[in-house]
Image (tube, rainbow, N blue to C red; front, side, top):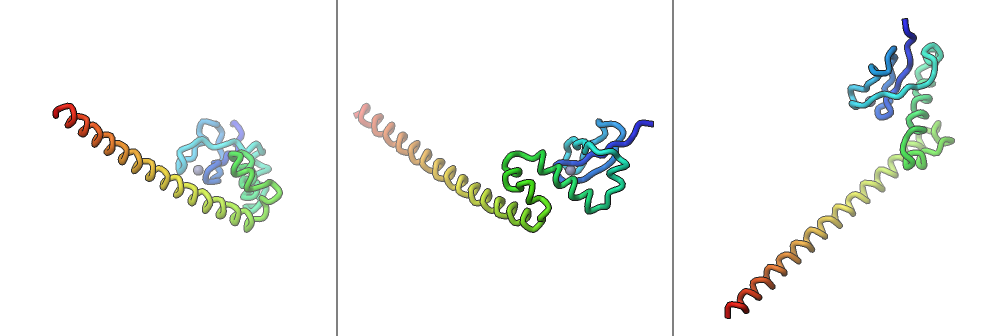
Length: 131
Ligand SMILES: [Zn+2]
């Protein structure tokens, strides 16, 4: 029988054991899971906290640069600081998003104003041509 391998979901952190890579799929996130690269038995020997820490670190290591920057590897084990940093980044992104939405709204308004103005000018031209 083929040996089991440990896989984890890089989005929700769920882990499971599979014989075949094609079965390593997170149904909650609808994505393929990543191979942990550790022997099944070694992983089983870890307690739940050590498994959590290992997978947390894996997720951060493989995350986009932005997450890597926030979660500098030496800070990973300090959960409070990690959550603090991520919360701050979330707020910053929410604020940025809000500002971008306001800009888009403003641009839409400007475009509509311009269009209305063009129509007025066209009407004026028509009136002048017909007189
Ligand atoms: Zn998942």
